[in-house]
Length: 414
Ligand SMILES: [Zn+2]
Image (cartoon, rainbow, N blue to C red):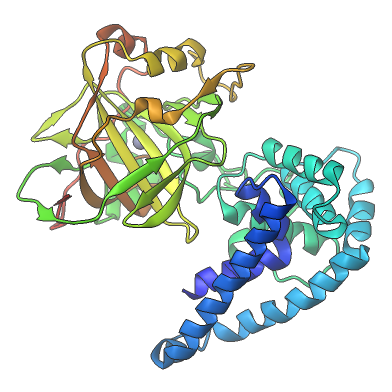
């Protein structure tokens, strides 16, 4: 809970604007509502803290820095309204000749928004533009961008340890992303790494050897994928996607075809909201059902406010042509390269979902290095069609990690 408070306090104090953009609130009214909502959340959390002495005792270490942050909030707010932060930062950045990284532009645009307010349409538009340019995948990234921006402006803002590696000195490129850029080479090739850790699906760099470079892949006790077979433990909650149409952004990252999803698509799992970040494909499906893979699988990768990951897996069985995949394959780059944004092509991820949302569920991991654990998997029982031709058009012949040992993990069914 303290992490939530910390994140919220930090979000308001240093990246309030970033937070608004992150939730893609377009109007100032909505933004105001958002901050009211956040403030309320903080207050509610505070009440809960008061109510829970035990938790308080356990969190003694966490509280003092939080209080400091809360105090900083007031100072920062005052600095924003006077415009000094903005001026300092603009001056600091003006000295740079090379141009600003998207993250720093976002930080700057965020500060302008906080300083000038949300009533000025030009400021809001500039901020939205900066957001779009930033390949941020998590709230943390936005907060880090703002924190680093503030720190660069000489403000007394403690940069979270998670953000330290993303300080503005890092050539404007973020280090290893904690977001689940599964199959994203940036994960393995973070600019802060001493050497590029490479991985593949076969040979010397294959899954059996991932553990040498990425310890969790070898030593983790709750790795994915699993073979799904009974007996199942019953759960009563549901998963309810609310995916929205948006501009198609598609990339061949050398490991898979991935679609990066604009903000706004969500899923509710057991009543909790997660944002859809991206979806990507594996051939054959990584998950097995009773020992057998499907022709392919699409993994929808989500993250909630607390940074917890949830993957919704839809298995694709060979059958009729899939119109959604037809659109995607039309624009999917056949070779590894940068993200492609085909002009005016819209896509709704919901086009790849079956009607029924009954699922199997287990606690797993990213299925690509660094194989980070605590990823909740939901594998839909209903499958959708993909034609044989479409399967063969997928540029990766085999990009599925082998089945991992369950180590006593239960598999749930709703
Ligand atoms: Zn995947």
